[in-house]
Length: 155
Image (tube, rainbow, N blue to C red; front, side, top):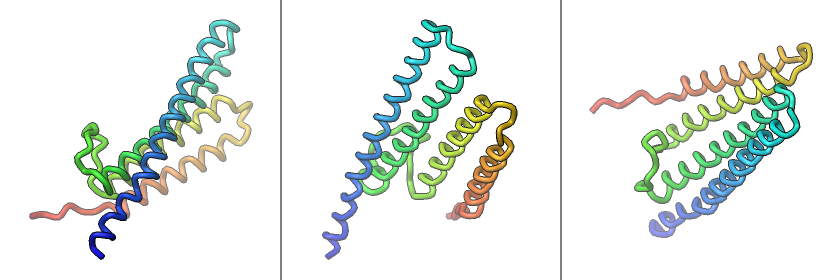
């Protein structure tokens, strides 16, 4: 029975690979969108405001791809192979490491989306509501991180 339960950890390979493939797709789409904006800006003298919004939208896709990549690497590293070579900042030892990395990227995405809405807003079209909402989500994530933080065990 122990052998069967031990092998079930490999079920995580499928969602980990799916997350990594989704990340590659989003990063490619975001990068392509930025190239299109650059070409469109040069060829058609696109307005600065339009360029900023389009580039921030593309960056948002790239950041979301980063989230998926971190999830994919994290799941694989936690369940399948702890010896996978990743940069030191991406090493994930437990679910708390994965959680903190994801929260950091989610905060960055919220900031990018808010700045995009701020740039795109005409005369304060409810931007205060967006700002308060974004701030509340970030504050909630900070409180969650603080409340669930493990204290290091001394040897």
